[in-house]
Length: 627
Ligand SMILES: [Zn+2]
Image 1 (spheres, rainbow, N blue to C red):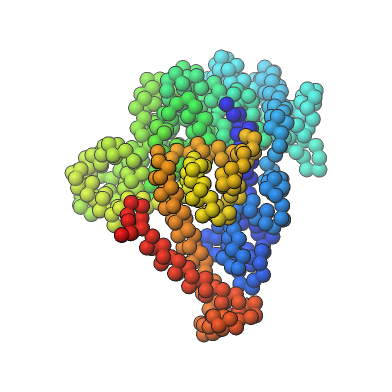
Image 2: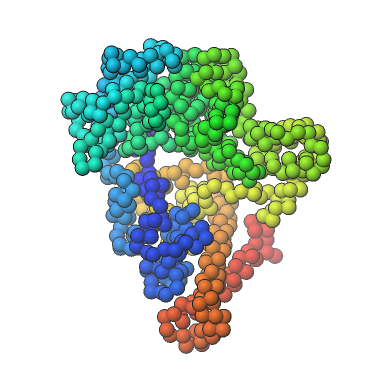
């Protein structure tokens, strides 16, 4: 099984850490344009900006003469005329991502940092027995009621209230300050040197899924702030990819078939003492798809255990990472979609166990084990939870208008439910709640959905990322026999990201795959593993053709928007008559000045786009013939 350090895709990591507009903005003067940015294209000579950066997509494109575009990597490739490796090195340096062509070397480095953290864990465990730690022991053993068995099992310790206790200890173990800083247990001092990150805190080490220490959590005693202090993100620790307690809980998760997710360390340790050992914590971050993947190795069913009082729910919203804090139907629909994005559709059975108000999981599991067992066993599906939250506070409808409003609120959630049986259950529930009939509710749901301008099955919120391009490339990778038809049809720069272009090129030329930590091979392997419909080669070809058309059309829309904006700008500057005159001159081949050519170019682009989009309107849809 791949470990964390080997499974990080450096290309994705770089994109996650660097803001494309900020990075490109260092080379190109950019100005805001709606959600995007624009500036003068650095790759051709122009006077009106036609170079756009799209932060949401992490891409850029020139809508002017050169027509170049791509992602962050394409930008560096083009700007510096370098190869992909060099671009990756440059961007990784900027992003603080450690690269190594030798995964053994990288593994060695990670092992080294893990051993520094292990040494710190040893030290803190020893200090927990000191006289000076009496307050910490009092807090852990009495106040929190954590027994000696749990103290040992979770390696709970104490960091002395001292700026150099750990630093000095590490040096006796042969680790220098740089090791301690890189491992996240020391903090670099301005002007050189380092001091202890954890001081006067109860320490709770964080292990990864293999049981290797990757970070440390520190709980303040008394009124010190912050209450919890974690190791920072390091080469070996990423909260978004680590679940506290997973190594200890994995067996029990497999045995019970359920993984319970809570927010903090104590909510893992409390249930553990009460005999519930299938609990893990997200350490205050959202539940990410990486977390889900880790749990998915042991079970399908993931239960978020939440404290439903006002403050607890907010915490739960973060723990769930599913934007449960919606105020509007749109936000609720978005939450349902995020859940599906995180859980990868129907593969994961995501549930929510609301606990009694004001009680955290630690208290419930210990004070009332029967209630805990019941709450976990009977946790409703995520969508049901959302429906209940939306209906809460909604009395029996006193008027038809009331009922319609209530149904409109839950619609986005129901549209995200793909299983018709499950959906029918919710319809029944809503009808009963509103004192209406299932048929009336159903009709209202359909009526509302049908009135959306995007069509009857359309969901009013955009689906998150997994793009057309990704599925298109995955289809190609999966079906080598499509090479004949599409290899030449798809131009080299068709895909938006540099890595996808290289995957495509390898697919097309049949070049052999690189080794498994080659970024291009990592992407290819990911695409090859995507779930696709069980198409025959012929169906796949039809599907690929349709996807290409759809992508082109979407691009035309973006292009036209950018062009229309440029046109408006040119008209504001020169007046509509001047624009018409220049266009006319250009049409006859007479425009020569650079600024005139710029204007002419915009006019032609807009015309061409309008024509091209008109053509696309008439492309027959799949299954329709043109006879
Ligand atoms: Zn350009």
